[in-house]
Image (cartoon, rainbow, N blue to C red; front, side):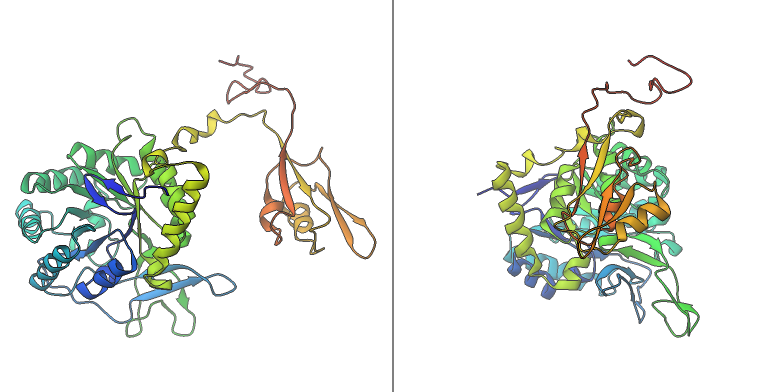
Amino acid sequence: MADLRCNIAGITAPNPFWLASAPPTDKAYNVVRAFEAGWGGVVWKTLGEDPPVVNVSSRYGAHYDIDRRLLGINNIELISDRPLEVNLREIAEVKKAWPDRAMVVSLMARMEEQAWADLARRIEAAGADGLELNLGCPHGMCERGMGSAIGQVPEMVEQVTRWVKAATRLPVIVKLTPNITNILWSAEAAKRGGADGISLINTVNSIISVDLDAMAPTPIVDGVGTHGGYCGPAVKPMALNMVAEIARNGFTAGIPISGIGGVTTWRDAAEFLALGASGVQVCTAAMTYGFKIVEDMISGLSNWMDEKGYENLDQVTGRAVRNVVDWNALNMNFSTKALIDPALCIDCGRCHIACEDTSHQAIRIVQGEGKRLFTVENEDCVGCNLCLHVCPVPGCITMHPEENGLPYVTWPEDARNPMNLEKV
């Protein structure tokens, strides 16, 4: 069987599935239940010293698809509102009882060296394996000068990282905010500050919906609402892109990455690994389906690795990075065409409608025996894939590359370009 043991910034765990810093890691009771279910590690819910934290009610808003499947959660919950001493005592107890599991503790403080240093030392004394600097929370704490208020300023990211590295011997993972124009600014700053690893993404700043009766954003707190942090399957594409950007950037390539953002299945985890992560953190999926979801994640990833011949996670991590390129490096002479399988077609017409109304009018309707038949006119098809994505039947529409014999041509070397530059 594949070896699922992982090592992120020197922190080891029996598998790459960790619970993210969030309500599921808020106390010993939850964390012990998670370890019993099989999670390889946790990042304890963010600790702070002052000012005192008071959480509100309600705290969550939700975004659903048409079948009421949860696509994302918006939360306005702050960091831990439990006494610091209680959290530290429980961290020590759980780590002692579960020595093989990764125990990383998230922390947050104001922009003062002593505040970060004191908190880091107290967490280290409790027996934690590592620290995660929460520089990404986009609500509540940022209004107090913490969280993303620090994480959006690269100079502050670098400074805080230096402060904590000087105060502790523990590995330091810097958690990055996605609420920034270029994720590389903060990633590079974290590395300059001496970070042993980075984790991303933190939640996306958002208003998830508006109650049109109360005329207030949800979740509603006594008649009003506020912006919050968006997480869950809907943010996964953004997270994958940011992980890949860091993994393929010359300065940050090689820094250990803990991938976060919509991990729900083993396949999601494998995608993060392929783009450069050494492990993943999970929150929304655990909150939606419970801790035992990790069983499917572990077995699914292990089975897939066995099928592909991967013996350990190192053979998967970063394997797709070399195939992530800038747009200008794509082959402009590559051509692919849609093909519709009439045996699988259910005559819904969605492919035709999408193509006719919004694309290139490449799908024709032909009357068959008892139902309509849909065919693709190759000369009009540009290979945009839209028909494949709107089709409700898996495998009914497939894309087939054309053998056109043309050379690999990139922009601006394309011979059709008026500049008529030669291909390098």
